[in-house]
Image (tube, helix red, strand yellow):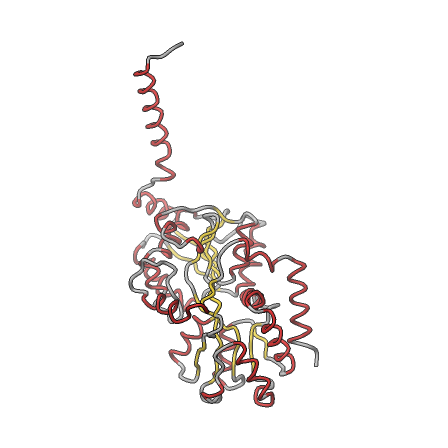
Length: 364
């Protein structure tokens, strides 16, 4: 049968309009509809490797903004977060949102199919390096730092780079014996991430530092807070590869502590969030993630010292641009993507941890 051109045009237009109408509920759902769907769920369950003290302002503001939604916030270490999520996934899962500083473990979970895609005006506002597969999203950027006890380490001895730290430890071994602390990469997912990216940034200097740590009997730790406690008490003089955000928060309250961003290169990591594929409250999860990525959420997060907004359009976070300019070529962000999986290869991880243990933590 042959249709006249005018009728064909009407049929095409009607088909197009029907398709647009069919797409609207999924892709153009109104803000009110999204909030209503989230309110019907009534709760969002967040698993986070982010101290509750850092997230408290966000949690309070979210509940004030959306009073019909309760937030269950579970704060744990990055390694515990990863293993608990995997264990619970076998029985249908419990977490709606995963939010962790262990970027590589988050990307592995996404790569293994544990996340669901999410697209919104807020995700569209992120820089390209902070999004992967529309499933993993960077929510901050935070520098990796050295921290020292300013009462016990003279100003002239403070290292400004990795190479200067190496020279300091070689020059004064008796001063630093048993008084250096850093992550144990076998105990901390974040520690493994930072040390393995240190290798990528400068393998020669990193392994020479590891040798110095081994000679001087480092104090291994599972968390930044544990290292900061040791430095503040004087049990350690200096800490290596600490999460700068937590260090700066603590240094604001404790004048004993001082933070150094190495001028040769400063790794910058981002807390990665994703929505679980098995989320029992998917609408509330999307609402929380959009809130976290929104200018409002980013402003609140960046009020914590050492936390910088991942968005370039948050005018309140001038400190982020100042940090980029201050570090210049030393600014080394860790991009979110498949590259983070390199050192999670079981053989590479085993070899790295064996080498670290043999060099940096040899038996007495």
